[in-house]
Amino acid sequence: MGIRGLMSFVEDHINEFFTDLKLRDTKIIIDGYALFHRLCFSSNLELRYGGDYDSFTDVVEKFFESLFACKICPYVVLDGGCDISDKKLNTLKDRAREKIQMAHSLSVGGGGYVCPLLIREVFIQVLIKLRVRFVQCFSEADRDIMTLANHWNCPVLSSDSDFCIFDLKSGFCPLNSFQWRNMNTIKGTRDYYIPAKCFSLDALCCHFGNMNKVLLPLFAVLCGNDHVNLPVVETFLSKVCLPLGTPSSKGRRHHRVLGLLNWLSRFADPTEALDNVLKHLPRKSRGTVKKLLCGSMGEYLQSQGRLQDFFQHGAYACPDTWNPGLPPWVLAALASGQLSPFISDALVLRRTILHTQVENMQRPNAHRISLPIRQVIYGLLVNTPPHPGNVAWDALPPQPPAFSEVERINKNIKTSIVGAVELPKDHSDLSKLTELSLARRQILLLETLKVKQSILDPIPAALKLPIAVSCYWVQHTEAKAKLHHLQALLLGMLMGPLHAMINSPDEEALQGGGAEMLYEELQRVKAQPGLRLDLDTAHVFCQWQCCLQMGLYLNQLLSTPLPEPDLTRDHGSL
Image (cartoon, rainbow, N blue to C red; front, side):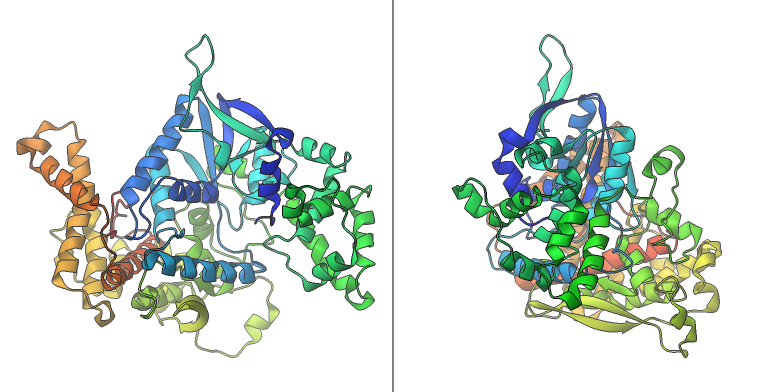
């Protein structure tokens, strides 16, 4: 979620709406999605070559080390899949188009911000290594974050302007003024703290004539957020005279934000304000608009979820409004991040979104190569009803199970219909999938990846899945992988084991210094400045990452018949 223009408006009034904090010795609730995007885009990482995952890992580790040094106890909350209503679909499609444009810009030497494909999985692996507590929500996390922060009376760390609307007991600290790289000590002590800014909802309301803070959710939906973008709202804005207050250059820049806040400050409560909105609209649309606006305002109320139960007991109840009757093991795996939101979207909506990388836009999108893997995933999920209470579902005649995929075509998006693979009956009952023997689950995984067990037998456990994925990749005619591509990939896979050997206390692991020399040489090659991006080469490795991503998701869905590889040390970046 996010409200257009609000964050820049409040930051333009930083001395009025924010207080200085010396943050230490506290719990803090972290918006995981906002954090990994912020660290990815503000740390001078290389975004063109498929990952730079080891540098990203180092940044994430340093961030949490700063928190630990200040005795700040982080709880990371990650977004899950899309809401069951799918009301953000248009917003998600718009963002997908924007990412394609930025990926194209990066591919031709321009600027842009596109997260590498596996960045979320890398982030989760770092959290696990550092023993940072985290949870993955069943849908969007904002309300759950607010509810948990108020339960524990601690601040929220995010970059989402919706947290300027939530009534948070201990406030909201924006990531861009959270100076974790510049720890200070309290005078006369050795106690570290992180300088931060904390947004004051009371100060904002005071600035606008002591307006009632319960009016702010209506402000959010009128101003425009990810859920509401109605033409009739524009009709209202064109008819009402929005008071700007004292004119200034900042006022002109934030005409809509200022005008709406000044206008709403006249009213005692949301009911009165909403009635005044509706009277500017055609009578025939008032009922529909009122229902939509009230529903969207409800997105700013406390959630029914109790994340504290997860952090204290390892599980929490899935909201009834979301749960489409999924097996308990699936709900537990989603909450603990062992299953991806991709799986959640496929289960609940029968729709997935395939994210664009920095690839050759003239060629079919890189995800095409992993379609057979996704079809097996869909085959495992197909017997779960896509929506709860959908009476018409059982009444439908038997039909081939189908899923829709939002994917890149040239420099735009399209929705493709994809069929699921028909699997043996004992594979297609999701509730009993974990009861299948390890051998049966492993056979399905390896058959999907077109690799024989005998090939993997001599391979170290941590590399079995990447090697299996590579076997799939080189056999696929669309990949056009050459020997030097495979050689480069295998050298990239050595980075993790070499890093582990160098940091091992076992002196024998370093005998002769060969591991350290090879690691340093690979790092030197990687660090060479000004390497021109070869689009065809980039596309080949993007295809490999797509295969690895879907191989990971299938492996997770099958309860990891192969060990999960360490992604934090550059698998598949160029």
